[in-house]
Amino acid sequence: MIVEIKVPSPGESITEVEIGKWLVENGSTVLKDQEVAEVESDKATLSLIATASGMLNILAREGDRVVVGSVACTIDTEKGTSQIKREDAVAAPAQKESVQVTVKEDINQMIVVPQAKKDQKESETQLKMTPTAKAVMEQANLSVDEVLEGIRRLTRKDMEQIAGTFNSPLSDIPEATREENRVAMTPLRRKLGQRLVAVKNETAMLTTFNEVDMRNVVELRNRFQKAFMEKYGFKLGFNAFFAKAVSAALSQHPSINSMIDGEDIITPKYHDIGIAVSSPKGLMVPVIRNVETMNLPQIEGAIKDLAEKARDKRLTVQEMTGGTFTITNGGVFGSMMSTPIINPPQSAILGLHAIKDRPVAIDGNVEIRPMMYIALSYDHRIIDGKDSVGFLVKIKEYIENPAKLIFNGKDAGEMLLGL
Image (cartoon, rainbow, N blue to C red; front, side, top):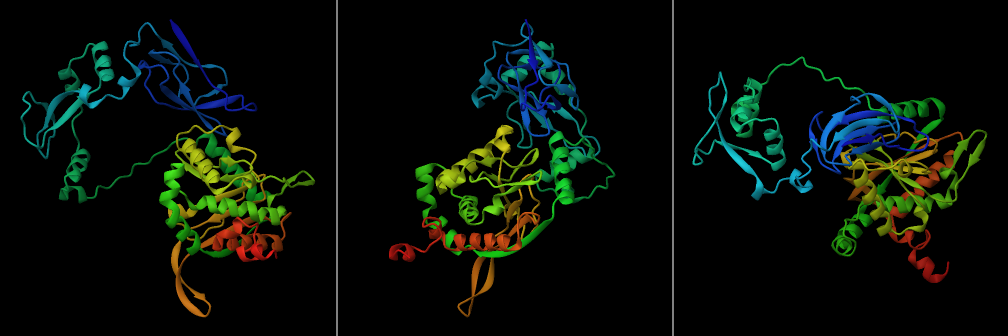
Protein backbone atom coordinates (compact mmCIF):
# COMPACT_ATOMS: atom_id res chain seq x y z
CA MET A 1 0.00 0.00 0.00
CA ILE A 2 1.22 3.51 -0.86
CA VAL A 3 0.76 6.10 1.89
CA GLU A 4 0.95 9.81 0.99
CA ILE A 5 2.66 12.27 3.36
CA LYS A 6 1.28 15.77 2.81
CA VAL A 7 2.81 19.16 3.65
CA PRO A 8 1.42 20.47 6.97
CA SER A 9 0.14 24.01 7.44
CA PRO A 10 2.19 26.38 9.66
CA GLY A 11 -0.75 28.78 9.98
CA GLU A 12 -3.95 30.03 8.38
CA SER A 13 -2.30 32.79 6.33
CA ILE A 14 0.45 30.58 4.88
CA THR A 15 -0.25 28.75 1.62
CA GLU A 16 3.28 27.88 0.52
CA VAL A 17 6.32 26.52 2.37
CA GLU A 18 9.83 25.34 1.58
CA ILE A 19 11.30 21.87 2.00
CA GLY A 20 14.19 22.69 4.30
CA LYS A 21 16.00 19.40 4.79
CA TRP A 22 15.36 15.70 4.29
CA LEU A 23 16.52 13.79 7.35
CA VAL A 24 16.53 10.43 5.52
CA GLU A 25 17.60 9.43 2.01
CA ASN A 26 15.30 8.53 -0.84
CA GLY A 27 14.56 4.80 -0.82
CA SER A 28 15.37 4.45 2.87
CA THR A 29 13.30 2.40 5.26
CA VAL A 30 11.44 4.62 7.73
CA LEU A 31 9.38 3.82 10.77
CA LYS A 32 5.97 5.11 11.78
CA ASP A 33 6.11 8.43 13.67
CA GLN A 34 9.71 8.99 12.52
CA GLU A 35 10.68 12.57 11.59
CA VAL A 36 11.68 12.47 7.92
CA ALA A 37 12.01 16.14 6.91
CA GLU A 38 11.91 19.76 8.06
CA VAL A 39 9.41 22.11 6.43
CA GLU A 40 10.13 25.83 6.72
CA SER A 41 8.01 28.93 6.36
CA ASP A 42 8.74 32.58 7.10
CA LYS A 43 7.23 32.11 10.57
CA ALA A 44 8.09 28.63 11.83
CA THR A 45 9.78 25.29 11.13
CA LEU A 46 7.61 22.17 11.15
CA SER A 47 8.46 18.48 11.06
CA LEU A 48 7.25 16.07 8.40
CA ILE A 49 6.30 12.84 10.17
CA ALA A 50 5.96 9.38 8.65
CA THR A 51 2.45 8.05 9.24
CA ALA A 52 3.45 4.47 8.42
CA SER A 53 6.51 2.22 8.20
CA GLY A 54 7.98 1.36 4.82
CA MET A 55 10.19 2.53 1.97
CA LEU A 56 10.33 6.32 1.46
CA ASN A 57 9.91 7.87 -1.98
CA ILE A 58 10.78 11.59 -2.00
CA LEU A 59 8.74 13.75 -4.42
CA ALA A 60 9.91 17.27 -3.43
CA ARG A 61 13.58 18.20 -3.26
CA GLU A 62 15.31 20.33 -0.65
CA GLY A 63 14.73 24.01 -1.37
CA ASP A 64 11.55 23.42 -3.39
CA ARG A 65 8.60 25.71 -2.70
CA VAL A 66 5.51 23.53 -2.29
CA VAL A 67 1.85 24.24 -1.64
CA VAL A 68 0.44 23.41 1.78
CA GLY A 69 -1.47 20.13 1.52
CA SER A 70 0.50 18.82 -1.45
CA VAL A 71 2.26 15.43 -1.33
CA ALA A 72 5.89 15.73 -0.29
CA CYS A 73 6.68 12.00 -0.27
CA THR A 74 5.09 8.57 -0.26
CA ILE A 75 5.73 5.43 1.77
CA ASP A 76 5.45 1.93 0.30
CA THR A 77 4.40 -0.20 3.26
CA GLU A 78 4.85 -3.46 1.29
CA LYS A 79 8.59 -2.85 0.88
CA GLY A 80 9.19 -1.62 4.41
CA THR A 81 10.44 -3.37 7.50
CA SER A 82 7.33 -2.86 9.59
CA GLN A 83 8.23 -5.85 11.73
CA ILE A 84 11.12 -3.86 13.24
CA LYS A 85 9.90 -2.09 16.33
CA ARG A 86 10.29 1.64 16.59
CA GLU A 87 12.59 1.41 19.58
CA ASP A 88 15.08 -0.58 17.51
CA ALA A 89 15.94 2.65 15.70
CA VAL A 90 17.97 3.49 18.81
CA ALA A 91 19.67 0.19 19.56
CA ALA A 92 20.29 -0.94 23.10
CA PRO A 93 23.91 -1.85 23.82
CA ALA A 94 22.96 -5.47 24.54
CA GLN A 95 21.40 -5.82 21.05
CA LYS A 96 24.22 -4.34 19.02
CA GLU A 97 26.29 -6.62 16.82
CA SER A 98 29.90 -5.66 16.23
CA VAL A 99 32.69 -6.40 13.83
CA GLN A 100 36.29 -5.83 14.88
CA VAL A 101 38.25 -3.40 12.70
CA THR A 102 41.95 -2.54 12.88
CA VAL A 103 43.35 0.74 11.57
CA LYS A 104 46.86 0.00 10.29
CA GLU A 105 49.27 2.90 10.44
CA ASP A 106 50.98 3.99 7.26
CA ILE A 107 51.52 7.73 6.98
CA ASN A 108 51.31 7.64 3.18
CA GLN A 109 48.50 5.16 2.71
CA MET A 110 45.84 4.54 5.32
CA ILE A 111 43.38 1.71 4.72
CA VAL A 112 40.81 0.01 6.93
CA VAL A 113 41.32 -3.76 7.22
CA PRO A 114 38.79 -6.25 8.67
CA GLN A 115 40.07 -8.14 11.72
CA ALA A 116 38.97 -11.69 12.44
CA LYS A 117 40.07 -12.11 16.03
CA LYS A 118 38.56 -10.36 19.05
CA ASP A 119 41.66 -10.05 21.25
CA GLN A 120 43.48 -7.33 19.33
CA LYS A 121 45.60 -4.33 20.27
CA GLU A 122 44.19 -1.29 22.06
CA SER A 123 44.43 0.79 18.87
CA GLU A 124 41.63 -1.26 17.29
CA THR A 125 38.12 0.17 17.09
CA GLN A 126 34.73 -1.49 16.71
CA LEU A 127 32.25 -1.09 13.90
CA LYS A 128 28.79 -1.62 15.41
CA MET A 129 25.46 -2.14 13.65
CA THR A 130 21.97 -1.53 14.93
CA PRO A 131 19.22 -3.99 13.96
CA THR A 132 17.80 -1.38 11.58
CA ALA A 133 21.16 -0.95 9.82
CA LYS A 134 21.49 -4.73 9.57
CA ALA A 135 18.04 -4.95 7.98
CA VAL A 136 18.99 -2.36 5.34
CA MET A 137 22.25 -4.24 4.63
CA GLU A 138 20.39 -7.53 4.19
CA GLN A 139 17.77 -5.86 2.00
CA ALA A 140 20.57 -4.67 -0.31
CA ASN A 141 22.10 -8.19 -0.33
CA LEU A 142 25.39 -6.94 1.12
CA SER A 143 27.80 -8.73 3.41
CA VAL A 144 29.81 -7.16 6.22
CA ASP A 145 32.99 -7.56 4.17
CA GLU A 146 31.40 -5.75 1.22
CA VAL A 147 30.34 -2.90 3.50
CA LEU A 148 33.87 -2.60 4.87
CA GLU A 149 35.33 -2.69 1.38
CA GLY A 150 33.12 0.28 0.54
CA ILE A 151 34.83 2.44 3.16
CA ARG A 152 36.83 5.10 1.35
CA ARG A 153 40.57 5.54 1.67
CA LEU A 154 41.58 7.89 4.47
CA THR A 155 43.14 11.20 3.48
CA ARG A 156 45.84 13.27 5.21
CA LYS A 157 43.10 15.45 6.74
CA ASP A 158 41.36 12.38 8.17
CA MET A 159 44.66 11.16 9.56
CA GLU A 160 45.31 14.47 11.32
CA GLN A 161 41.83 14.41 12.86
CA ILE A 162 42.36 10.87 14.13
CA ALA A 163 45.81 11.71 15.42
CA GLY A 164 44.42 14.78 17.16
CA THR A 165 42.08 12.56 19.14
CA PHE A 166 45.10 10.90 20.68
CA ASN A 167 46.88 14.24 21.33
CA SER A 168 49.30 13.70 18.47
CA PRO A 169 51.56 16.60 17.39
CA LEU A 170 50.26 16.01 13.86
CA SER A 171 46.99 17.66 14.86
CA ASP A 172 48.77 20.98 15.23
CA ILE A 173 49.96 21.03 11.61
CA PRO A 174 48.02 23.81 9.83
CA GLU A 175 46.54 23.05 6.43
CA ALA A 176 45.75 25.92 4.07
CA THR A 177 42.34 25.88 2.44
CA ARG A 178 40.40 28.01 -0.03
CA GLU A 179 37.10 26.22 0.48
CA GLU A 180 33.81 28.05 0.90
CA ASN A 181 30.42 26.96 2.14
CA ARG A 182 27.34 28.28 0.37
CA VAL A 183 23.86 27.52 1.67
CA ALA A 184 20.52 29.09 0.85
CA MET A 185 18.94 31.32 3.50
CA THR A 186 15.94 29.73 5.14
CA PRO A 187 12.56 31.45 4.73
CA LEU A 188 12.60 32.20 8.46
CA ARG A 189 15.97 33.98 8.28
CA ARG A 190 14.96 35.85 5.08
CA LYS A 191 11.82 37.12 6.77
CA LEU A 192 13.76 38.05 9.90
CA GLY A 193 16.24 40.04 7.83
CA GLN A 194 13.44 41.91 6.07
CA ARG A 195 11.78 42.79 9.37
CA LEU A 196 15.00 44.03 10.94
CA VAL A 197 15.81 46.28 7.99
CA ALA A 198 12.25 47.60 8.02
CA VAL A 199 12.58 48.52 11.70
CA LYS A 200 15.70 50.57 11.03
CA ASN A 201 14.06 52.34 8.09
CA GLU A 202 10.53 52.84 9.44
CA THR A 203 10.98 53.68 13.13
CA ALA A 204 12.67 56.47 15.07
CA MET A 205 14.60 54.01 17.19
CA LEU A 206 16.68 55.20 20.14
CA THR A 207 18.40 53.27 22.94
CA THR A 208 18.83 54.30 26.57
CA PHE A 209 21.08 52.49 29.07
CA ASN A 210 21.33 51.89 32.78
CA GLU A 211 23.19 49.53 35.10
CA VAL A 212 21.79 47.18 37.71
CA ASP A 213 23.34 45.85 40.89
CA MET A 214 22.46 42.16 40.75
CA ARG A 215 23.68 41.28 44.26
CA ASN A 216 20.27 40.84 45.91
CA VAL A 217 18.83 38.75 43.07
CA VAL A 218 21.98 36.62 42.85
CA GLU A 219 21.94 35.98 46.61
CA LEU A 220 18.20 35.23 46.57
CA ARG A 221 18.62 32.82 43.67
CA ASN A 222 21.61 31.03 45.22
CA ARG A 223 19.91 30.78 48.61
CA PHE A 224 16.70 29.17 47.37
CA GLN A 225 17.85 27.41 44.17
CA LYS A 226 17.96 23.92 45.72
CA ALA A 227 14.55 24.24 47.38
CA PHE A 228 13.11 25.74 44.18
CA MET A 229 14.35 22.81 42.08
CA GLU A 230 13.02 20.27 44.58
CA LYS A 231 9.56 21.83 44.48
CA TYR A 232 9.22 22.74 40.79
CA GLY A 233 11.68 20.45 39.01
CA PHE A 234 13.62 23.15 37.15
CA LYS A 235 16.14 25.88 37.92
CA LEU A 236 15.32 29.51 38.61
CA GLY A 237 16.95 31.85 36.10
CA PHE A 238 17.36 35.60 35.84
CA ASN A 239 14.95 36.09 32.93
CA ALA A 240 11.97 35.36 35.18
CA PHE A 241 12.94 38.21 37.54
CA PHE A 242 13.27 40.61 34.63
CA ALA A 243 9.99 39.49 33.05
CA LYS A 244 8.22 40.10 36.36
CA ALA A 245 9.96 43.47 36.74
CA VAL A 246 9.05 44.45 33.17
CA SER A 247 5.39 43.66 33.78
CA ALA A 248 5.36 45.76 36.96
CA ALA A 249 7.12 48.64 35.19
CA LEU A 250 4.75 48.45 32.20
CA SER A 251 1.84 49.02 34.57
CA GLN A 252 3.41 52.35 35.55
CA HIS A 253 4.60 53.27 32.04
CA PRO A 254 1.89 51.90 29.71
CA SER A 255 3.22 53.79 26.68
CA ILE A 256 6.14 51.32 26.57
CA ASN A 257 3.51 48.62 25.92
CA SER A 258 1.98 50.54 23.01
CA MET A 259 2.18 50.08 19.25
CA ILE A 260 1.21 52.05 16.14
CA ASP A 261 -1.66 50.89 13.95
CA GLY A 262 -2.04 53.26 11.02
CA GLU A 263 -2.81 56.63 12.62
CA ASP A 264 -3.86 55.09 15.93
CA ILE A 265 -1.90 54.12 19.04
CA ILE A 266 -2.95 50.82 20.64
CA THR A 267 -2.06 50.24 24.29
CA PRO A 268 -2.94 46.73 25.49
CA LYS A 269 -3.80 46.43 29.18
CA TYR A 270 -2.28 42.93 29.22
CA HIS A 271 1.43 42.13 29.12
CA ASP A 272 2.34 39.46 26.55
CA ILE A 273 6.13 39.34 26.84
CA GLY A 274 8.31 37.66 24.24
CA ILE A 275 11.56 36.03 25.34
CA ALA A 276 14.19 35.83 22.58
CA VAL A 277 15.59 32.29 22.31
CA SER A 278 18.51 31.04 20.24
CA SER A 279 17.51 27.95 18.24
CA PRO A 280 19.13 25.81 15.51
CA LYS A 281 17.13 27.83 12.97
CA GLY A 282 18.11 31.24 14.34
CA LEU A 283 16.59 33.70 16.78
CA MET A 284 12.99 33.00 17.78
CA VAL A 285 10.73 34.96 20.14
CA PRO A 286 8.06 32.81 21.78
CA VAL A 287 5.51 34.78 23.80
CA ILE A 288 4.37 34.34 27.41
CA ARG A 289 0.74 35.50 27.73
CA ASN A 290 -0.59 37.66 30.57
CA VAL A 291 2.61 37.89 32.56
CA GLU A 292 0.89 40.43 34.83
CA THR A 293 -1.13 37.55 36.34
CA MET A 294 1.83 35.20 36.92
CA ASN A 295 4.28 34.65 39.75
CA LEU A 296 8.00 33.87 39.35
CA PRO A 297 7.69 30.04 39.27
CA GLN A 298 4.96 30.26 36.64
CA ILE A 299 7.02 32.63 34.51
CA GLU A 300 10.15 30.48 34.82
CA GLY A 301 8.20 27.35 33.92
CA ALA A 302 6.75 29.04 30.83
CA ILE A 303 10.21 30.24 29.75
CA LYS A 304 11.61 26.72 30.16
CA ASP A 305 8.81 25.10 28.14
CA LEU A 306 9.02 27.59 25.28
CA ALA A 307 12.84 27.43 25.14
CA GLU A 308 12.71 23.63 24.88
CA LYS A 309 10.14 23.85 22.10
CA ALA A 310 12.35 26.34 20.23
CA ARG A 311 15.40 24.08 20.47
CA ASP A 312 13.34 21.04 19.38
CA LYS A 313 11.71 23.03 16.53
CA ARG A 314 8.22 22.48 17.95
CA LEU A 315 7.10 26.09 18.31
CA THR A 316 3.82 26.96 16.64
CA VAL A 317 3.02 30.22 14.86
CA GLN A 318 0.53 31.07 17.60
CA GLU A 319 3.27 30.81 20.23
CA MET A 320 5.42 33.37 18.39
CA THR A 321 2.83 36.04 17.55
CA GLY A 322 0.96 38.71 19.46
CA GLY A 323 3.63 39.91 21.89
CA THR A 324 3.48 43.44 23.31
CA PHE A 325 7.08 43.66 24.60
CA THR A 326 10.30 41.65 24.15
CA ILE A 327 13.27 40.72 26.34
CA THR A 328 16.53 39.56 24.77
CA ASN A 329 19.46 38.31 26.82
CA GLY A 330 22.81 38.58 25.06
CA GLY A 331 24.52 38.10 28.40
CA VAL A 332 24.25 34.31 28.11
CA PHE A 333 26.74 34.58 25.24
CA GLY A 334 29.01 37.02 27.07
CA SER A 335 27.77 40.32 25.62
CA MET A 336 28.63 43.32 27.82
CA MET A 337 26.53 45.93 26.01
CA SER A 338 24.41 46.16 22.85
CA THR A 339 21.55 48.09 21.24
CA PRO A 340 18.75 45.56 20.62
CA ILE A 341 16.45 46.07 17.64
CA ILE A 342 12.70 46.46 18.19
CA ASN A 343 10.52 43.48 17.34
CA PRO A 344 7.68 44.99 15.21
CA PRO A 345 4.88 45.90 15.65
CA GLN A 346 6.05 46.37 19.24
CA SER A 347 7.57 49.70 20.21
CA ALA A 348 10.25 48.67 22.73
CA ILE A 349 12.66 45.89 23.65
CA LEU A 350 14.81 45.30 26.74
CA GLY A 351 18.35 44.00 26.29
CA LEU A 352 20.07 42.15 29.13
CA HIS A 353 23.82 41.58 29.30
CA ALA A 354 26.53 39.68 31.14
CA ILE A 355 26.86 40.00 34.91
CA LYS A 356 30.38 41.16 35.75
CA ASP A 357 32.02 42.05 39.05
CA ARG A 358 32.86 45.78 38.91
CA PRO A 359 33.89 48.43 41.44
CA VAL A 360 30.99 50.74 42.30
CA ALA A 361 30.49 53.54 44.84
CA ILE A 362 28.22 52.48 47.72
CA ASP A 363 27.60 55.12 50.42
CA GLY A 364 30.92 56.78 49.66
CA ASN A 365 32.88 53.53 49.62
CA VAL A 366 34.15 51.47 46.69
CA GLU A 367 32.75 47.94 46.66
CA ILE A 368 32.87 45.07 44.19
CA ARG A 369 29.35 44.20 43.05
CA PRO A 370 27.91 41.91 40.32
CA MET A 371 26.74 44.51 37.81
CA MET A 372 24.72 44.25 34.60
CA TYR A 373 24.19 46.82 31.87
CA ILE A 374 20.59 46.94 30.59
CA ALA A 375 19.42 48.67 27.41
CA LEU A 376 15.98 49.79 26.26
CA SER A 377 15.51 50.39 22.54
CA TYR A 378 12.26 52.19 21.77
CA ASP A 379 10.32 53.93 19.00
CA HIS A 380 10.58 57.64 19.74
CA ARG A 381 7.48 58.34 17.63
CA ILE A 382 5.18 57.21 20.45
CA ILE A 383 7.49 56.82 23.46
CA ASP A 384 8.98 59.94 25.03
CA GLY A 385 12.39 60.06 26.64
CA LYS A 386 10.86 60.61 30.07
CA ASP A 387 8.90 57.36 29.89
CA SER A 388 11.78 55.36 28.44
CA VAL A 389 14.23 56.50 31.12
CA GLY A 390 11.63 56.15 33.89
CA PHE A 391 10.75 52.64 32.75
CA LEU A 392 14.40 51.56 32.85
CA VAL A 393 14.86 53.14 36.29
CA LYS A 394 11.87 51.12 37.56
CA ILE A 395 13.43 47.92 36.22
CA LYS A 396 16.60 48.82 38.11
CA GLU A 397 14.66 49.45 41.34
CA TYR A 398 12.76 46.16 41.14
CA ILE A 399 15.84 44.04 40.45
CA GLU A 400 17.94 45.73 43.12
CA ASN A 401 15.10 45.32 45.64
CA PRO A 402 13.17 42.17 44.61
CA ALA A 403 10.75 42.51 47.54
CA LYS A 404 9.15 45.44 45.72
CA LEU A 405 7.86 42.97 43.13
CA ILE A 406 5.61 41.56 45.85
CA PHE A 407 4.46 44.88 47.35
CA ASN A 408 3.50 46.74 44.15
CA GLY A 409 6.70 48.73 44.01
CA LYS A 410 6.76 49.72 47.69
CA ASP A 411 9.20 48.73 50.41
CA ALA A 412 8.04 46.20 52.99
CA GLY A 413 8.30 48.95 55.63
CA GLU A 414 6.01 51.25 53.64
CA MET A 415 3.43 48.50 53.31
CA LEU A 416 3.67 47.71 57.02
CA LEU A 417 3.09 51.38 57.93
CA GLY A 418 0.35 51.84 55.36
CA LEU A 419 2.26 54.55 53.53
